Length: 159
Figure (cartoon, rainbow, N blue to C red):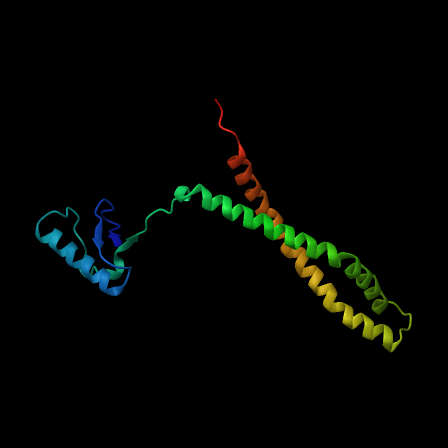
């Protein structure tokens, strides 16, 4: 069901079957004209008022749809954090070694072709580590909220 209202009369709700579409807005306009003809609309609308000026009323999404959904999502967020933490830990040592080797590019010390080749191959590891680390930091911030959801769900009812 699509619902519409008017900026001039927010108390008026026009309900039509289907999703928000041009056809649904036309049906809402028909209802609006019927209200106006019946004298049930106290607001005067300007000439040229059209379907595009109707305001769609969206149902508020309820977070309490299911506490179980929030718990499931919290567990998934924490699971993702655990996976990312492992990826970061596994590649950290190698990435830091490669990072140290990058400094040779900025020195006057001469390097062999083999060292450059090894360094170029290491860039992929460095990039993967850096990307995983960024994703881990972002996931960690989201996981704080997930941890709170689980803590709340695990509280025993007080008597």
